[in-house]
Amino acid sequence: MARKVSVASSAVKRLAVIRLVFFIFIGVLIFRLYELQVGERAFYEALASGQHDLLADLLPERGEILVQDSLTNSLYPVATNLTLGQVYAVPKEVKDIKYTAAVLAPVLEMDPVELENKLSKTDDPFEPLKEAVSDELSQKVTELKLSGIYIAPILVRHYLGEADYGQILGFMGFVGDTRRGQYGLEQYWEETLAGTQGELRAQREAGGGIIVLGDKQITPAVDGADIILTIDKNIQSRACGAVSQAVTKHGAKSGSVIIIEPASGAIRAICGAPNFDPNSYGDIQDLLVYSNQVVTDSYEPGSVFKPITMAAALEAKAVTPETTYLDTGEVKIGPNTIRNSDLKANGVQTMTQVLQNSLNTGAIFAMRKAGVEAFRATVAKFGFGKLMGVELPNERAGNIDSIKEKNEIYAATASFGQGISVTELQLAAAFGAIANRGKLMKPYIVQEVRYPDGRKQMAAPLMVGQAVTAETATTLGAMLVQVVEQGHGKKAGVSGYYVAGKTGTAQVPYEDRAGYDPNKSIGTFVGFAPVDAPKFVMAVRINEPGDVIFAESSAAPVFGELAKFLLEYYQVPPQREVK
Image (cartoon, rainbow, N blue to C red; front, side, top):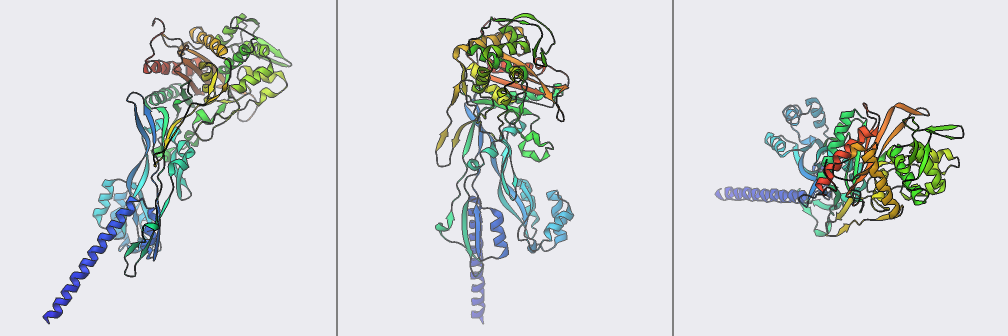
């Protein structure tokens, strides 16, 4: 009798040891799966449903996106990954649905009825209840010790910098059942950031144990690459703040700014307002807020285009800055009469004064002196009507087709920025060419791509072409200084420095009929500084301000504020006495 008890006791002990070893093995396996970032739904579904063969995806870690901090010479992540928890249920294991729902609902901040419905899906082996829960909340759920309720680790995309980077980065959203990058860099660089999915195969033993079928049954995932941007964190923050304040101040529909290094084409800041925090992208009602309007919006630029017209005339050696014409206040072309925006006749004016006083009649004079063909060719050489190729989605090329029309009226209106469309990116790049001795550089926002195997792909400045000669660019730059010193661009000036630039107040076409809405305008200022060795070129756009009409009161002050900051940031010494 004693022997029977001893045998039974030994059997119980052996069974306990076997169970302990089994659970340790399961724990190690689950930890290994966590390390490998298993696609939890596929694995847990198979595990819960008692399948013999288990197949799970191994998910790569998405690459980070980083910006630069020139002050500390360091990198700062603006898109990264956090490991959080996902609360899920295996409904057939839930013993008391009503009790479980009643206890769990307040912890997850869910409606008890909704939760009860989820727990009632007994045919569903994997029912997600709440994603991206904190460690603290995971602990609370664990302490409830509810049957059929589990927590799986998941990687969640997390963004830093709040709204400053929303339109640059985009966000991770669902396309069907799959999370993919949408808008911004997350969309444009989806394949590079996402990496390559791997695979794990395992089998269930007859006794219920799990066996990983050797190393050959694991295809490792390849993590995504990290992307380092040309964006300077400090400049981006200041630029976003300035344009956001201007939009609020003027009650404008929107606003935007881009700052480029003219010698290389590197984009140091690009921002729009209103913007959004990609961590809470679902809060946005207007989908247009997701778009980076510097790249995606084309519009009639207005008078900010006049320097391009003047460049054509200077390049053709048809005019000099001192060339004069008689401004009668209007020009007749066939049945059409074109007038200056101020409806005034200014008498004898030089080409410098044409830019300084923003005269439509003078722009037409310069276009005619260059000739329509030369004007059209120069516009194209500055990159208008073509994609710039920046590494952001949905870039627009604008439209300059009207200049190709034989009727001179189209070239005449284009000379002062009407009847054509451009993007803010194109304007910044074109003025960058003026700042860069006539060399048009390709704007770029990605400095480097770092792959997980150690490879690095570095960006290099790319010259698109010679828009105009260095002589023309230098002459035009000096003329544009007078716009800031004596003309409509005074509010863009910075005491102690020579700043070059041009205002542009564009009319807004009606959406439902021909003609322009007299109550709407778009203010643009584009310029660079210091004029003799430019550190930056900047374009500012304020779209439909509510309290002012002209760019000199909307866009120019934003440029001036940021230009002052940039000249100090780059430690550029004053060129003359500070007033």
